[in-house]
Structure formats: structure tokens, C-alpha cells
Length: 326
Image (cartoon, rainbow, N blue to C red; front, side, top):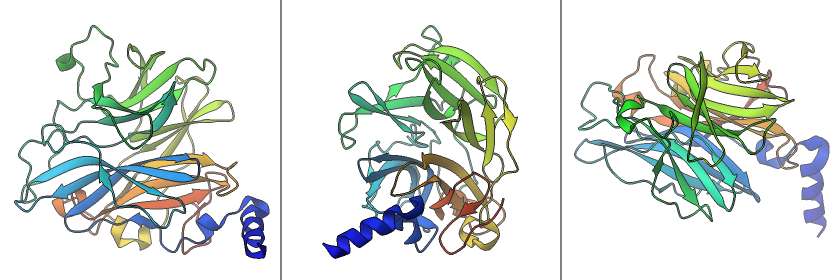
């Protein structure tokens, strides 16, 4: 009993937590020569972290397939084996999970398709084609997921083939109208549409932005994280129309991380400042490397999921350092 009391006390002091203090490496999920982990999205629910991420996997015949996978942890150190929740199909390549929201009695996960038919590891780097679209999957227990449903974010009367290439979906509730939901997605910068039932959508507008958008509520405004060519950028807006950049892109310890020297990107941030087990904003991201130039060896392999945290979005910390300013 004395040991338990001491542990609880240590966890609560100053809002600090053993979960972050005990981490030994900024890498949570390490890629290798046949696996790349990209585009993290994390849900913290009832003491468990559910990490959804893209897995790019090289098959024995050299073909490359992308999946959405999930892994879970109670302490951010020990993670379950990643489980694939989407099918094997180069014409789909379900990937880039955006976030998970609670809607009615269901959990909703948004994600994309990223078709690259015929792609092999021996090919030159290729990106998803014009058939890339955004989707949702549903679950009642965060374990079993439905088939994907297309998000018709341009409106119900716009045919799928006329919607245009779109990737990197993210769902966020309206600050002033809780029954209204926005979907952000990469198209002409970042575009956004709104819905009250997550089925019928109305196009809302766009703004200049990088990819992999993550949007939070913060002090009565929208706080948007995005990925420029390298690093994580931050924007603020009171109304989704007037956006201002905050600081320079965040690159954390990239200068000292060969595993992230190609690109540090895909930042996903949870506001866990009020969580007594965390007490910070926590950023999950992916790093690719080694090498300064993008190749199949650091785009479709050797990508890893990392972690960092901050009290104020200015000074960032990660395992092995006391902090650094971007």
C-alpha cells in the first residue's frame, strides 16, 4: 500500500507524470527496411492510448502495400503488436488516419485511400493517384471496425469521380455550434466542409496550409497543426477564415536524429494538460531517414513514430533532453 501511495503522489506532483518522465527514447514505433510507420493519430480513452498509423509494408515479391493499423499502450512505452484494420489492395491503400471522434453511440475514424497500383520497392518514388479520397470507419468498441464509407465532402450531388484528389482527413466539432462538425482535408491547401450527421456535407472553404492537418480547440479559437515541406507548423483562427501563423516550423531534435533527417512530419497533437497522468500537449509525429533526399528506402521504409511534449507550444521536450525551442 505504501508503494502505491508513493506512486500516485509522484504522478500528481505539479501535474507531472511518470508516463513521460520514464520514456527512454523519442521513438515509440520503429520502422525498418521492410516497414514504414507514418501519419499517427492517437485517442486517449479510459487509461489506454490507441495509436492508429499508416503501415507501408514490403511484400516478399517487392510490392508495396499500405494499411491502417492500430496499436495500444497503457504507459506509452509498451505497445501491442500493430493490427491491420484495412484490406490489402494497392488500388485502395487505406492510410493516413486523421483522428477518432465519439459520435452518438459510435466511434468514428477518418482516413484516406492512397492508390498506387503496381508499386514495387525497386520503382522510383511515386505518390497516390487522382483517385485518392477520404473515408470513415465505425466502431462500438474500438476493436472491431466497419467497412469504409466515402465522405462526400463536396456535397451529395457531386459524383465521386468529380470530387478531386483529397487526402488527410480530420474531424473537429464546431466551437460555437456543438451539433456541427467540420472535416478538414488536403485539397488546394487545406479545405473544409461541415455536416450535422457526418453523412451530408456542405463545402465551407479553404486556406493555405501543409498536409496532415490536426485541429484542436484552444482558448476559444481553432489551433491547427500542419506539415509544410519539413517540420510541424501551427496556425490559429477564431472562425476558420482568418488564420495566422504561430512561430516557425517545429523540428524538435531532427538535427541529431538520423532516423528523421529526411523529413519530420505528420504531427498529431493531443491536449492532455488536464490529464493528471500527462499534464502537457503531446505531439506524435513520424520521422523518415536516413538521407537528406527522399528515396524508396526512406519514404516506403524506415519511417518511425516519435513523441514530444510541451506546456506552451513553444518549448518542446522529448526523451533524452530537457527541452529545445523550435
